[in-house]
View 1: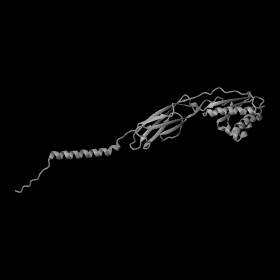
View 2: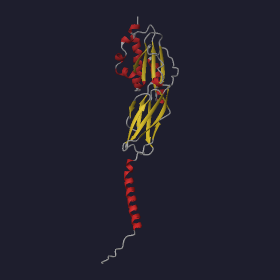
View 3: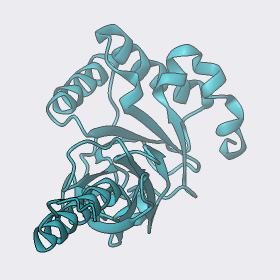
View 4: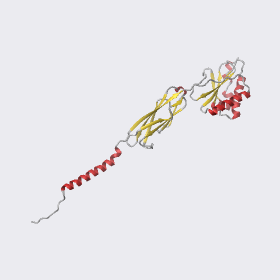
Length: 260
């Protein structure tokens, strides 16, 4: 009988080799499939400052601590107070506040979602809104044109130092002041501003609706501070409009009903 002597492989070693190949293949599959594992971003929101004056803008920034780049993430913001005026859908937003927000808080919450796997997380930050009261104004009686120029010069020196303030100049009249008298006072103020090329956008005139006494009352008003004058008693005119057309911005009908 013909007999072939075939050398067989060592079966235990063969099983071990096959096992190693299977494990290696499974490991390769696992590594290739790791992109499906949800790695959620960790969000952190920071505020530009802890407090702000009512009327100023609030700034918030969102960061992902696992990735310094905002690419690959979606940002959705929600705020408790005021509208988002800039940045919705981005890592940075700007929120507008009003003068009557004093004593409240702006809470900004961001939801960050990773585009590749849809995993999301959120974080919040808070800014306290404060109201700053105005300081007591100065009082001036009747002034000539040179004295009005000196008054305007003095207050614009202060405005140059206090960049977040405005000049609110209250003008009151007595029973003897006609519309022409009132117009001359307004013209003197406008002339003083124009002569020095001052920034008229930082000046508001408040014209008394009813005659009381002849007086100039200037206020340096910080943005966000309460209006020190009663809107029921004064008419407010932006000086920028007076520079363009005094009579149009200060028409006779504003004061005529109170004249004899």
